[in-house]
Image (tube, rainbow, N blue to C red; front, top):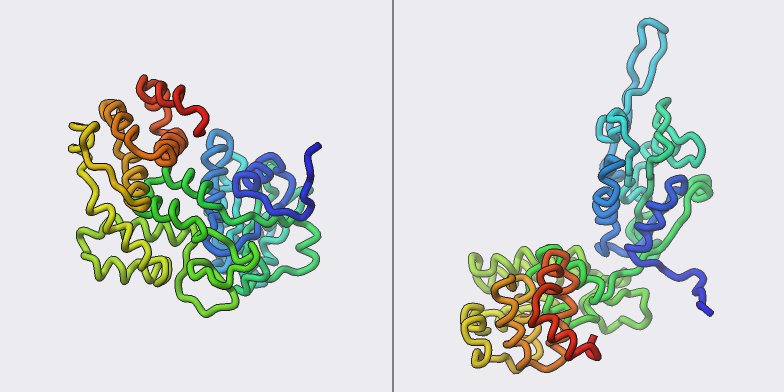
Length: 356
């Protein structure tokens, strides 16, 4: 029998599915900073692109004029509200509307948006919303201490769900499909506790993560790791000192110093050309960090011509790294068809089924 853990968190994928399958429910998605709540909007809009338009609302930075404006109807000698074009209500399709950081918005703005939270006949001003439209909100955990609040009459109209911070496996699945630098992926693979949450329990000694009780200027989150990826990928143009300074500003000093070693691993690895030209004799890294950097770099570089020789090269690695390469290559949507039609990869899967 399945055990139901009442009051548990959900993943970002689960939250997105709840939102898409319940268009008449107004969800408030709460989670700690930088874990990907806002990116759910992009995911949902992409999945519903054939039927819905997307409208992103950065509520804390909105004013009343960003929502609707009164105009005079001279014929009836009355006024009407014309909604802002950003809501896309005039385009004739249902809309996916995300009120990002709704719980931090100015009270007049939240009051004006409030009729859109109704289950029956949601509206913006005097304009009713297509019933197939999807409207949801995001906000931080109350324990994050970043100024989130909501009145009781609003709470009674919404369903609040808490999303968990992605663990390193979930994050890597996203990273291999979104152009994250191999050095950053390798570092996360070797430092999985960098994606722990302060809500997990005793994390007082974890210097990488967000801690609402500490004074911090930077820390590791999925968002800051994406920023760090941009910095690492331009390290040759900026030099080591500027790169580490920028990393410190994005992921914090402890993470920046540790990632520095992985940058050094990248610069010490055999060239891709030497691996493909001589997979049986090319140098194989001996440290875990260097192996991680090479494996995640290969996921981005490998193509139809190079996969077979690279599989020959990978056979010289420990089974852990062979499995890491295979799993993450299959998680890459662009590379997966190539992998499944490659005979060397198929042979490896058959021989190593127990590793997966």
